[in-house]
Image (cartoon, rainbow, N blue to C red):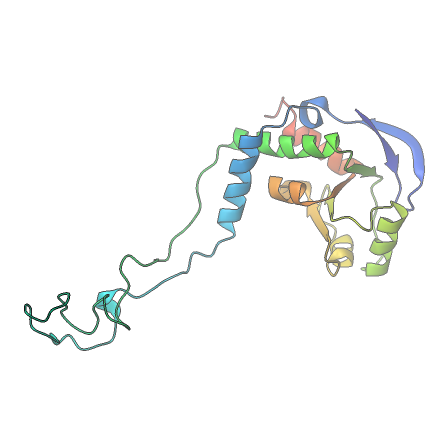
Length: 212
């Protein structure tokens, strides 16, 4: 699959670039995508939820009623779970939601996400660019020139660029990532994926079958 290469002014450079079929042309694997997105979302959870159990409630431990003959359930003290203000039975405890996912499954998921975007013609390739200073206006101008200002964007760079990152930071529907930070969730969550030429080359090196 060939795509045109544009500059940040939205002008067609007259060059075409071929997307790697072993990445952008595969049959997407939905289950791999599900697992990778599930792991990403799980890793966002703090896991600090906590409720107090019976032994942790601050209350008297005096037995508040007879063992038998009261006409109701047995209860030992005011901390009993059957009373209002008592402890909670089997309540949530702090935990880590991380789970392991094999490297090849994660690679397959990323390939599948990029393949979906290629099928939807939602990939734009631009020449490598930089801003002289952080300016949101310049980033917005670039998106308008490329006719993608109304889309949720994922701009992928080959390496970290502070000026570009700061220029996009205040734009709600724009996200700037490096190739090393690229993940399945962010690719799928974007309406359009904007790849610089060097980023596309880096993706080929990382996700091609030779490396996988």
